Image (tube, rainbow, N blue to C red; front, side):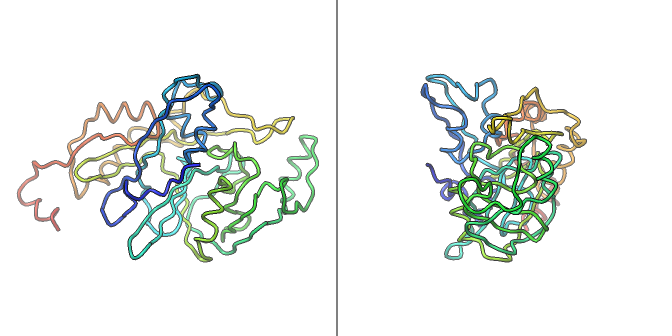
Length: 323
């Protein structure tokens, strides 16, 4: 299992770059699935699927080159504590080592449409090892409607969907937790909580103290600077629905994908233009708008260089930008 502690590739946040990590690729062997490849590279299902359009998730095939979307633009949020960007199914944890700021990033599952993950600022109020699960009546009713019985108390163990670790948030009823079904990480399948790979929550659990701030944002479009270069990363805006957590046989049902709706949550190229104006207000850039449109249409979830700093500024603006 690879460890994605992004350091040499940009986790030193004092360097002033908005990008972390580096893109990669591997060549699949016959027995590989995209889900296997994703987990071994600390990626989730949605992001590896988006980065590899046309590749069969279950049978990529011998010798297929698989793109690994392991470079990221940091979300537009305060870089302290935990930031959850539900649009990209990803967590960012900001911390310091010896006075140097770092970030580590993890794939996550989020709430499906009828059990959406709430946005806003919250914090960790309690840490629980080997948690019990007390499902609310609404979830028990949902199970009953499917002809299944869910007890009011699910003790720790292999049948507990919370896994071995849970971080309770100040938003009542919401947790960051592990899972006994890691194949669903990186999908929109939960009842609103944030789900992580068992090995990821195991690492995170002892690192984060109670009162750690948690910011939950929904940013499918991200601009970021790396030196004098401007990058754009586009994810499909969240749509209604999502994957079904369980079929009748208890297996995860993976969603069909026919392309994201261009009107999902009212987002469009207009939103990207408005975001560009914000990002370049104090640092104008020359941008290839044809490339921006291509990045928007493909929505691969991969940072793409779309412009560079504009050196042709009026002389009276240069002192302002130098400050």
